[in-house]
Length: 412
Image 1 (cartoon, helix red, strand yellow):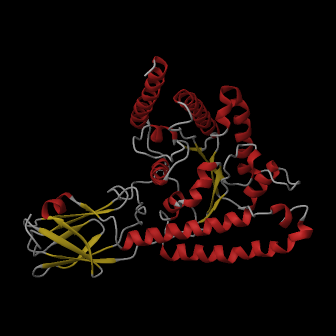
Image 2: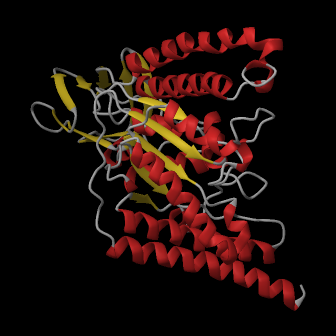
Image 3: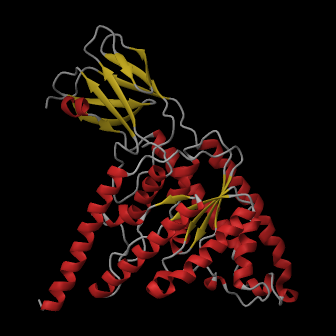
């Protein structure tokens, strides 16, 4: 390996270690934020570049927010546009007017937002320090527009890249991305806006969070991003811990569980979580921080099967039950996955509606040719509303009944 390559590799490693150290120090000195609360009927908008457009295929960020408030009828609209910047240069179409910049503000106003999560800076950071002042001016203009609508702004930082071409370019790009993240933080502080630091947690995470291109997040990246967002908004982990004691004359349960019966060799208890767990993804199992874990004490050596609503759910040893077993599948996970799927379907329909193919021919200066299709775009409202109703119906955890036979199936 040449000296140049060795130096570049060392630079990347040092950057990663430094980011992790900064994350630990920041966590030590930063106070917990005041929890963000939504109101009944609140409208939340995602505005930015590829970070939000790619979320259309995932649904994790929207799931994290809507499932936190199962009793509120929240509406979400994703205005993410890959390659976009604070001057809306990626939103250009053959239709003029409006200009891309005018179109951006029309789209914001059309959503009638109460909260707008803004994630810009990734594209602009390629201009380095020289482009920073222009970026700040553009971002503040958008904030001014959101303020004029009476909505609250939540500013998200840039995210680092894992690999941007060469190792040398990766170091330079991450330096610029951090520069723009700090600028966004300063704007948030000056204007008293909520700020979500995505850069530090992602830079300090050693898991594979990126697609092969090294720039955009993969499924695991968005799954982690949802947890970062929840913490930054002041919301506690989703974990629900249930402890069942079997050694007493009558079994007892703590947490969101209630003993129904504990006679003979069988314990039956009910459980209803306050919120659904994050949906399991293919790349990893749910953790205790994102789901329900059940700890059962007092079991004799052997293996025991927990039943959920009459169906076998999980079998584990007495030692594992005493440590706590994460319920990474079952009714709640099925609910969570269904909601996430409906979120993705709904957002794809909205994408078709506000970014239709052949926009110039349907809505623009050539609408005299295909303007009749505008009715088709309007008709998507009923389909979107139908999916939102399904999300509303299934976003609250249901009561589940669990049964444990105290006669083990086998020895350890």
